[in-house]
Image 1 (cartoon, rainbow, N blue to C red):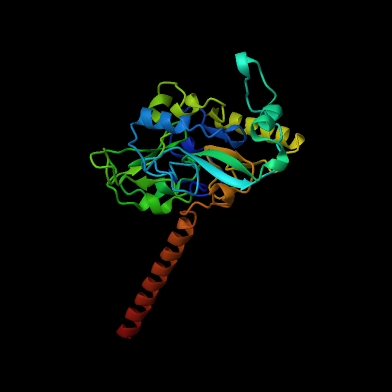
Image 2: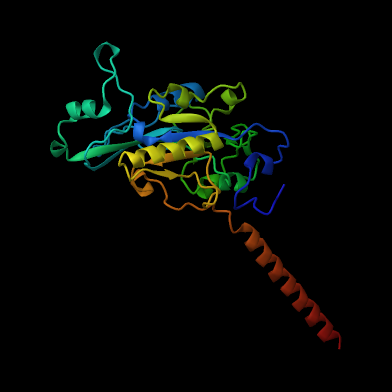
Length: 312
């Protein structure tokens, strides 16, 4: 079903895909201000979805040992090193000896020393497929391997994918990838990415990564409710003086119609390796088809005129 906004603009993705009776759109809100970089989400994702091992080597440039999203890394926790700023209370859950609650600022100061002693800080963020409202990977798939679920998410069907790679080039976030190894792993050559644990959603369960997150940095739920939660969180951080806090991917009017997985960031998107202004790569397809149709009509008209001219 193709509508006026099927390739660009705000829509209900499940309804636009033809689901007349569908649940509310599901997604993730990742609050990077409370991410501690434990990578429990990465492990839970691998265990539940049977994702094979990744590189897992230290490169000497970061404490991050999983490097990036790829076919064998559907969740990735980035460790971004930045110049230090004075510590502020971000509302991190913290417990002292005997389970006694400890003030977050006090604890951070005791562990890291005074602000003058710190010359860097870490920004940590658990990245994942964005499950775009307008998903170019889905638009370009020639086999129907990628499909829009009733929850508004984008899912890959391994048994149908032919490994053509069109979706890899179409994704504006560089999320989707074809599996290249290790030897003996399933689905070599097949496109792979986060499914938002589609099998768990159909059983009314929370995705594995959100279930495993100990700080509730990854929240799962109805997208509209998550957006309200995200807006409230940003407002609180601004009141506390964290003016760099901002939301990424939550605007239905952005270049991909908003995403089903959006983030609270503490710096510019580029710092986290995210494109600052992503646009669905199939946005211009309707205009291109129209121009191609007009060119074909012009050629046809020219042929007719030429034929009639010869008859005289």
